[in-house]
Amino acid sequence: MQNLLKILLRYSNFLVFIALEVAAFLLISYNNAFPRSSMLSTANAFVAWQEEQISNMRGYFSLRSLNEQLAAENAELRNQICSMKSDEVDTITHYVPAKVVQMTTDQLHNYLTIDLGSNQGIRRGQGVRNEEGVVGIVRTVGPHYSVVLPIINTHTNISCRFAKNDYIATLQWNGQDCRFAQLADVAAHMVVNTGDTIVTSGLSPVFPEGIPVGIVENSVLKEGDSYYTIRVRLNTNFKRLRYVEVVQNAHQQELEELQHGLD
Image 1 (cartoon, rainbow, N blue to C red):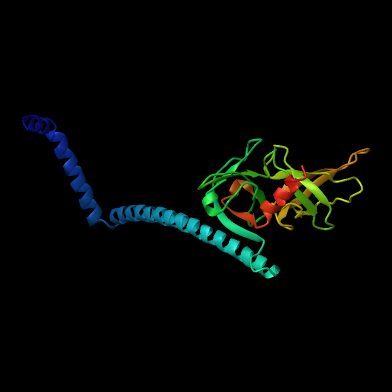
Image 2 (cartoon, one colour):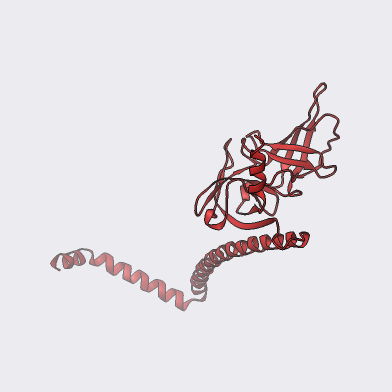
């Protein structure tokens, strides 16, 4: 206590000066319109900024919740469409909404992790898509999460076709730009145009036919070559990928077992 009193006595002049300055400032502010309005404007501006930040934060969480709701609704609408197309009570294809919780886009062997696993019926080899188009194929599955190899992985091949004439080709990635992939096995006699639409072929149980993949960005056929070099601009924007749907084919396991029996 004595030490505190000594400190107060030592700095008493300075403390009195500060108190007088504050008092003078308050008197000037409240007795003069302009300083008072300036002070109130500053205070109001700070409060407005604070409210804006709170509003933005609320909007962010609200938007995230809305996106999750829209993803679920998209999957449900796709399931209803499949039901209308099928005469079976239990349709072959079913879509399960999921959220991407981890992803890479700048490696040769990119991957993404989704928040669904075996507890939700996810299994290795199932296809993954979003509202834009093809995303990839489930590679490993845990109880609560699964790892997906996207089409921007050099180990992933997707069976595709040209929408205009059903010509079959294979989509591959060269490890360079996540916006583009390459289309292989397109013979020289085929007429390829910029803007041609590429979709899934439906020749494997992973994806049903007709899911958008991309459009032809450019094609090159050198003299003497038997096949085109084709660059495809992918429909899926992997830089903004947040929500996906797992494609569950009720007959996939049976088809895979039959195919493996031929090996």
